Image 1 (cartoon, helix red, strand yellow):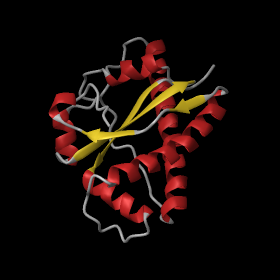
Image 2 (tube, helix red, strand yellow):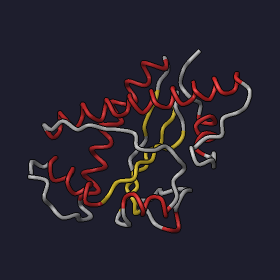
Image 3 (tube, one colour):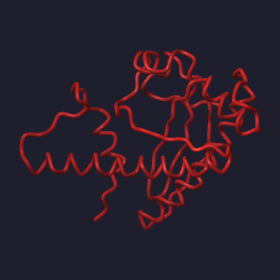
Length: 180
């Protein structure tokens, strides 16, 4: 039995509306299952972060630390409050042992920083549309490492499709942020 979540289980966890993120059921068996689901989601994110850290170290010669701040269904007001209105959405379709879309929301200034560092700059470049290609390439490399690692853990193939980068705006809040 795998400790990883199915797409339906991930969707169920993200659609909970309680202040703490999830309404824990009253019977102990279900509460234990919810704990295992969070453990599996945490493990999947830990693998993603480990692979991202390794790729970033290779590409930029800089060590980056990642931490999970919150896990909740995204909406425009929450994104704007946390990250500001100048955000981009990176969408990567997954298939095989994991299916669905992985979405990451990044500030434009962070996209510019990462892109500039990839090109051996000092990280001080202002954001421009050209940075979208660079961040897409970076995410492609991260996802290549991630799908390899997750495929090995799952014992089945995991594939990532093409990375798309688009603006995160009011019309797409919480539902989708797919674009160019």
